[in-house]
Image 1 (cartoon, rainbow, N blue to C red):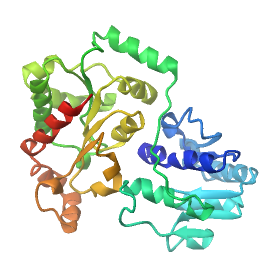
Image 2 (image 1 turned 30 degrees about the vertical axis):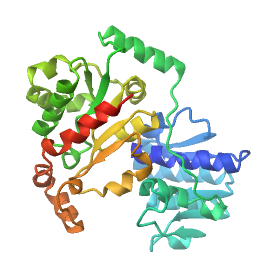
Image 3 (image 1 turned 135 degrees about the vertical axis):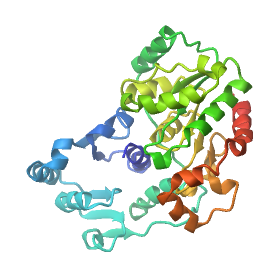
Image 4 (image 1 turned 90 degrees about the vertical axis):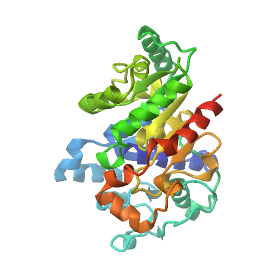
Length: 342
């Protein structure tokens, strides 16, 4: 997943800091390249294309090419059978991964995941940095970063200006849809939050983050907004590619909405975020106390009693739990977030 690839990229900065002369390669799915392209700490990418994923013959060819690289160390962050095979074929002397019963014999250092934060960062960050401990790299605060080119930033600025967006006024990117219905705040509730944004700032401008196949669902949220809010939504202005979305987001004052890859990308662009987590997720996995100066995260458990058992029930019936997370709970924090934006 894109968010996982972006988050795991922190390992490269930490490795280069400790071992500046090391050559570092990243094995990733081809469609995730845009979030780590131009990263100065990564020397080469080994891309797994859809064709390689679906062909045993092509995957075996990929594995043989991995073997020719003569790697000294392999770190498997993915933890699946496919990545375990890559680790095996690498012939690396040191192989590091998360502990799993069925693959632990492959690795020289199978490490058990942390269940709670030790450094007030998210577990996603802390568990990844833990994988560097066998290399004598201790924990240091580091966060994912996305590297845009000057040309991409200028081009997106012109696109926004040509679309009649005034960059001297506040501009918000709204993650109106999650990666699935189970990770999407109800449409009427989201529209109510958008209305509150415009109530607080009549000149604020709003962009929706969606891809063409999601247009109808995004339009439902637009239609639920009141007329004044609709006037401030530039519904047809969106990134036609992942890199263009990133460049557009870099001009925004904040990203607001459903938890997912877009929020992680905004953070990596140093854009403040206001995130609504799905009721079935553990907020601690993707949000740490170290982020609270710039970012806000909302979960149903912040307002009403919500147990681990409720998490399990919410995964089967997310809508019922989402409906308990009423906009009235969220609006005070959202208003404060907007007020605190520089």
